[in-house]
Length: 330
Ligand code: AVI
Image (spheres, rainbow, N blue to C red):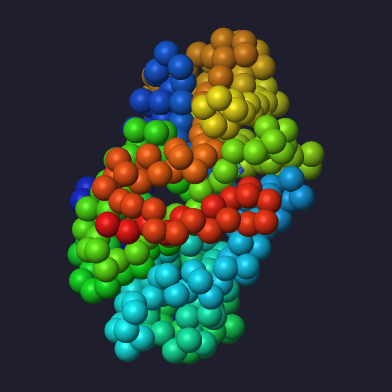
């Protein structure tokens, strides 16, 4: 199975680093410097994220996996059409390695559902690995992988006629700012019909120490994941970030539910870019905000759904109420 590449938006890109360069230029000229976590996921970043998911402190992945095992039959029932002969697309945004999705795919195949699995991910390497493992483990499955970012995936979905069940798992929803999240959900909900279904993974608020440890693990893998953004910028934009003078810093605010990750400049320094005349000054302990990972409550999720024109049809949780996979519909 070959992954289909979708060119970002409708721009013709002669320079493959154009989007990153424009993003970095804009983000590092703000009064509070910021870069999007979307750029974490080059091939090395995706590999590091696979490592994060296996860390003892990083509870979301194994919790959602346990949740899927616990509710596999009910989730499959909720996503597939009532009429078992009706074909549908199972689209997964940000599919990654698809580990927990395989539980659902197996359940649907065993129940004789007629569906095509469309995993969408920004990393071609992650998607190729997934396609290969699916071919080996579930040879009867119809798979159509697509390499695309979320914006393109939304366009792709709107253009694909037929009944859809859309998966957006792993608390990827938590990585949006509240404004971007609402915009994304509205665009996602727009083309859905009342027959379509949406399953979104939300990480729930819990002991703040548990949350904080998940984003500052003892082996330093999350730090390496954050630093990889600077390695990427050095490589792709010819910058000279000296990693000896940057630190990974994370905080969790239990009042807002926001985990925020930063790269802290440990001294005053100037970073140069390949483009002539482009450099950026950093004060000692100035931060680059690199990621949000929001944690939610059930009432907040209901409010978020309502604002996007969606209703909560079912709310699946694990034994500890750490994580929720929420079934939404129009
Ligand atoms: C992909 N996303 C849901 C992860 C999260 O938990 O926000 C990314 C991550 N960042 C640090 N650790 C994991």
